[in-house]
Image (tube, rainbow, N blue to C red):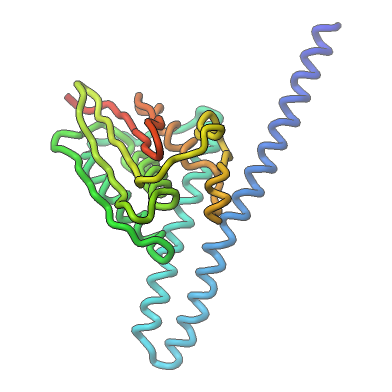
Length: 243
């Protein structure tokens, strides 16, 4: 009887924790989704007025902004879904032959499109030939975007964002850095926790779900790789390559 009571208490605790995590997740998601939706609505209203005035160039710019915000929403929703699936271990990968340089260039292009209104920084990309793997293209791109976004937002504005890679046997190591000092010492052990946002994020006035690094590491590990912090704001994604 005592064992049954202990088991019931354990189940009740798990339910409470699960409910709290769900509530926290929904609160963060709702908060983060409001901003791009508000930008899209404002851009659509402005585009309507510009079309009525015959300002086709202005309307085109606003419509482009709507497309970019739609891409941002899609990325956020996909990240939320992946974070939820990683927590349950139910992630179905779509594997294909992928060249790291190509997926890295696309990840940088998408990130620049989303942050260029607030942040303008050059990007240096140095990835050798032969970095090819059997990966889920969309998810590896998502993992890279999380690392590149961190470099843009929390790096040194006077430094370029850098991505460089090297091969070690059947593994490729891609390092991403924004030239910044990195997280505070007390934050390091929590960087890859789901929903964790450090003090530097709050001080930078950045909204965010705290899912980027958690999701990036989870995606890499599903591929037999990993994501780790090296030093400062340097983060490395390691992946198996095709021999």
